[in-house]
Length: 130
Image 1 (cartoon, one colour):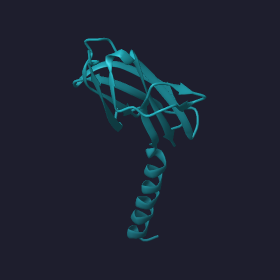
Image 2: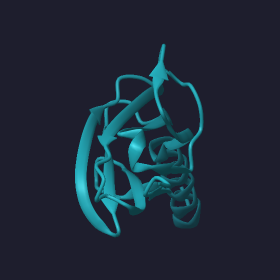
Image 3: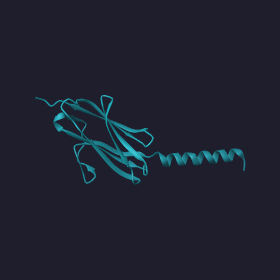
Image 4: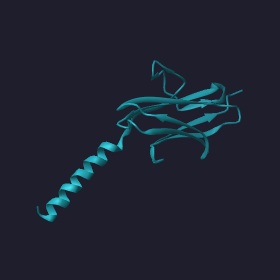
């Protein structure tokens, strides 16, 4: 076999292996609640009177990996929730209590088992109007 053919074959195999291992988030959203494994609404701005917010993700091709929801408030990590992904299509969610002093820009990073960010989404938490 010619060396160039062997190298080309290896590159093709590596490309396909990488693409099958990559995985992704196929759906995600902040919601007030999850019922029957589905979000009931989509929220982008809430007030602290909401008391709790939930982040939902549907994961694709991340089976047998650990995925993390990393919650941040103004770029400070507040909470992390780890999930063991059991299948090629897997839905997970985590919730965070929102207290009166926790206003600002919230972000949830979805991290793969190596700590690489797959997705990042933000939510604004405001004070309720008097």
